[in-house]
Length: 340
Image 1 (cartoon, rainbow, N blue to C red):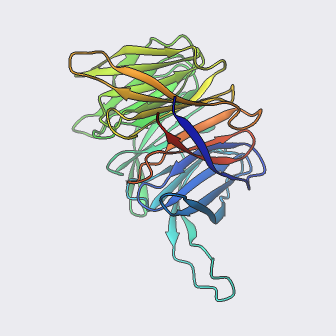
Image 2: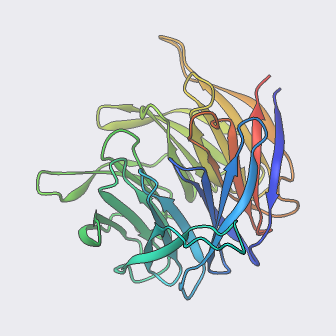
């Protein structure tokens, strides 16, 4: 089995940390918390990365900041809160402070998006950056068209019967996935009038589907659930079918999955759960053979006695073996994965 090395443990949040997001272009990683702040860290160095607090954003949200996401060009940061709003942030170069050369950039709120009537659980930008999806406790999924200084409601999707937990975009096409307390996954695309509609419902999970992540190639989808399984789905035109079930590797709810590029093949899949464990699989497939998921490393008690709320791979070249995690301990931890 391979190894996992903790590069750094980043403190600062004064309450639970819920999600992290790696900037796809710049060396930045963000985390959000019940303390209503977002903390941004910059990093330098390839072999031994050093992380430094760039800025802490007092978001103005009145409740927990539950979710964050970067636009594909790395210029916008979206924050979603239990106060039901989403705020878009843009970097403004800070004036140089001669007494403090470490002064970082300022992030200004440019748009506040409102619409959903209850807690925002997840936000995600489409691959093109043209769309932003949100999901909420009110059972809705909203799709917004994003413009330089404005936004427009594209669709309000009311297909789920319970709280919607996660939204995720396909890496190559404008296909949106949502997962819910109703144990299902819905897949949507748009028509010529820019109206979004569901084209598939995935029903194999036996309990809440907490999180989803598409494979980098876009042919597969991983989903994690309260039923203690991770399901791998394969696409056949507009249909998606379970092709593998990963079970027996977590003892409590699996809150997060992230499918990164890894070092070739179909990439690496990471999971984080309420049992404090982080698992990493190497995903491969040979012609005419079923997909293989080889467990390459496990980290027990990754956040002490706390739940792991989210895991996410860095997607920048040279750093694809770097994994971030956040938990109820309020910490952002950065790990480096080495296969055997």
